Length: 168
Image (tube, rainbow, N blue to C red; front, top):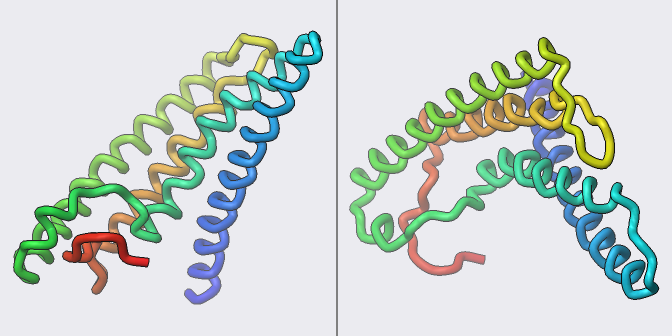
């Protein structure tokens, strides 16, 4: 079981690292594109296409790690004034709702991937890219997010801290 847990954490951290690398690539590609344009040249269509894909991928690849770190955005005004038993129930209820939403999105994402493969769909822009390469991240990321939110439903830890303000 310990190896499975390590492998799972390695997967989450690897996806987050890949998302971080893509974020750096976005910065580099934008700077290079501006420099190339200022030199009077036309940047490769690959720059634009790769930044579009990177924005999409980095959002979904980093999301499960963000849930694990409790890095999500929520309104602390309500959670900070709730008594601990009510906060516990509310937080677990919100987490359960998140599990259901993520599970539905993972299922629909898997349907979409299968449909893209079945139809041999391509994303036709500067290059022909099989569409399943774009959509495969949906079922993976939303399944992992459902698992992470599930930890807050059944685990000892809850999603919301009950404290207001920045905690660093």
